[in-house]
Amino acid sequence: MICPSITPAGQLQAISNQLKHNKPSPGQPAQEIRAALAESAAQLPVLNGVQVEQVRTERFSGEWVRTGGKKDAHWDTKVILYFHGGGFVAGSCAVYRDLAARLSAASGIAVMTVEYRLAPEFRYPAAGEDCLSAYQWLLDQGFKSGHIIFGGDSVGATLALMTLISLRDEGKALPGGAFLLSPHGDLVHLDGESYTSRADRDPTGSRETNQRILEDYLGEYAGEAPAL
Image (tube, rainbow, N blue to C red; front, side, top):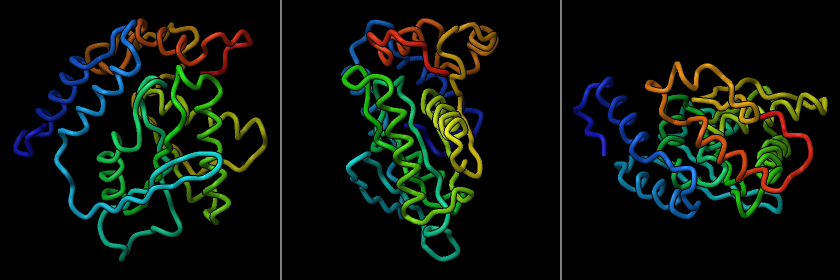
């Protein structure tokens, strides 16, 4: 747990150290990675005033997270659609509830996290399909495309990019914007210079772990590699 009295720089360093310590090994079973993420999330302090509402549809599952009172907030008109990280094999709405709550508190906007299907049980294109379904569901609920903001971290940011590309290629309405935290912009060639130049500053990924990510998500898929 990170102590509130630590300076922001100290908190950032503590988070970085925790990420380095908990970085999955290339051969680590998915169940172990999921358990480690859940354990880390369970150590976070519980925030006050967080409202959580489960969403279950025929096409996807997710979770609404709202923080604070409804007054002066755009609960009914604007939304952050958040895609969590976890290397396609781990992560969940519960694990990311704290981050979603903080995003909601900072923005005054409701956050919906997507419980997309995980590999290796569900491989490409399952996760991307669920993200597209979540966006379409929000549109069906009456949200305007321009009032929806995509967000994501790690491979969640990759999924945000994939969803944007799919929407663009299909000529569909794009969201109002997107923010990406430590995005894996290319999981196919793995030749980005930031793998080396930012290795110490951003411990969320490496060539070795991302090769495992690609193999887990694509599995036996023999077609053209998706534009990750």
